[in-house]
Length: 443
Image (cartoon, rainbow, N blue to C red; front, top):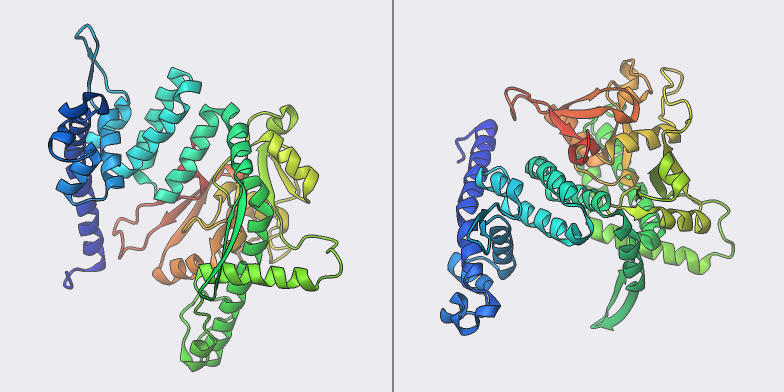
């Protein structure tokens, strides 16, 4: 393997990925049939029980050397994609025929297929049959190119579209389950906080605001160290910390540690604060259409959160917090500033966030991203939507150092962002769809 070039190694990885999907596709009907012959109603005649196992998943997991949870995904997909027979003996199609085709063709992995089956079966009692079939067809195609976090976002929005009336009950149930447990053992204080996405939005925004400021400060120190060591600073994108000064100043904390320290900082401030701040330093941005705002129906989203929320929750947020309403379809501020100013405005970032959804490189939430000029200001770049893209600090420097290009097609918030890999990764430099459109239900 050491003799392979980067391009060859990527090709080998892709080939093994395709092979894995085809092998899994061959195993799916086996798992489905084992599950069918191991149904609990069969009692002692169950195949799994006759082999000394409590369930089909235990039988499969032991034979294949996988965890019971992974075996359960195989049986779930196997049962959902197996041909059926009516009581009359007539052959019936699979319960999820589009997923069955995608799995058999090796286009869709078992993990993604199981997630789609779980969502579709959950909303089936409340969604129309035609809408379910159309959504299944769309998801079977779209999920093949998505990362797990992107698929999660897609499924959350798909469920909100199929079952809009189910949003409020789910949020109410999550709100009822909110909790904060505090335990101390062996000198360790453990806090476990659980909340619905609406109630937790200000907590998340405050913590992420401090984390973002810390990451930016670390990046500035690295640049200053590079400049002191003779590396170019200014408008460059070099994030390789060099020299002893950079090593000494490097922040070695993990993201979990940064979030924990941010919470500690907030509580320290609260204990010593004698006056409520007159204005927030971070924002909770909620996005919904003008029609949803007027009618009070449909689903909205909170920046940085995958789970959609109902319109009633938005109104509760508006009553309790200073939120920024991003109403799409209405009048807005001037979003193209040309060369009149160097930095992107707050309104421009909200518009670009609507287009990109988060970091176009890794999907990091908007709060951890900055708007970066595609053509640098120092090279004549304009401070316009068509020349700005959301990137976290890590992806900003990584993409530049590795030779990636970014292209924006179309006007305003409906534009599509494409990431173009360098030739050493893809000799053909085939553009890859990025940003919100990558996991959108409609393009």
